[in-house]
Image (cartoon, rainbow, N blue to C red; front, side, top):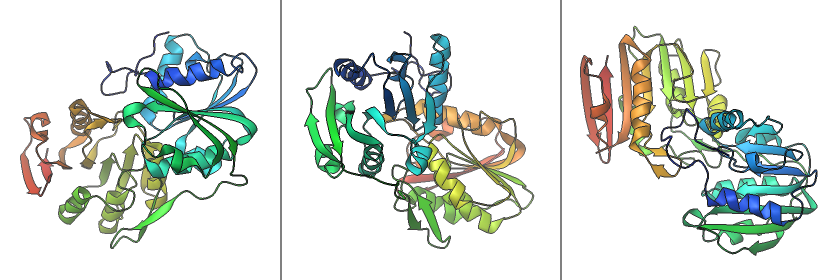
Length: 361
């Protein structure tokens, strides 16, 4: 079976599966339940490294974190002739609504974020009955050293399994949590914008990051502009701030991370604001007068400068002829080499470890 990162990801040649995926599938096979008509919950599925290897008769529900991974899974299913028979949901829906049923087996790619581990472990536990087996796995270099301590409130049985090919796994059972899902969201005081909703796992959950703060101190929307795009919007702090300046403008917010999109929908809840999950601006044919972007440099956990290149290509190709682009990034990341030669002007301010660019098309 050929599993790739699909057509939307930044580094298409990077492996789409790893030893953690393989370990989870192996654990299900070794459990003796593999060939039965069981209900399986896969949490944090990526490009299909787990679900595409399960028996077709299994009743599978899977949870995904990112739009590009969702598109990559659909691409791999089609390319491998696998009929989509599973129920798919975003991580945001999972944490807010749940699966709607108890499951027999959970296959969990363990995240790196401690708060997200707590929220997912709690939610998983509430979908388990007394005989449910929960298998969690991650690459050893990304495994939280205190993982067992983090989840002991949610399971009565926790066992560390042997490392296989640089992946570590855990077996969990005897769930402790029952009843309705709690509200996993939180709030932060945005200093002048009121309180913003955040979820575990979103970028800079507890405070607006310093780079964004420096951008907000400088950014202004041209009076002649009528449309704004916030690319990589996170939980919507930039758009919330700009809306206070120009409530008459149409706003489009886009992010790859489903939980961030859900936060932004709550934080910028106005009629002239559209928030959606997407691969930068590649899903729209619309051009924008002003585009704002906190430029990404990572693909998942990996530093990958091609992400920034592809992001900026999308930004510049969707700017109107007399548009303006505002960027913020860590200083020294050489954004300038990705700028088009046709720019009317490019002004940079460096503040500490951040640089803010104001570009006129």
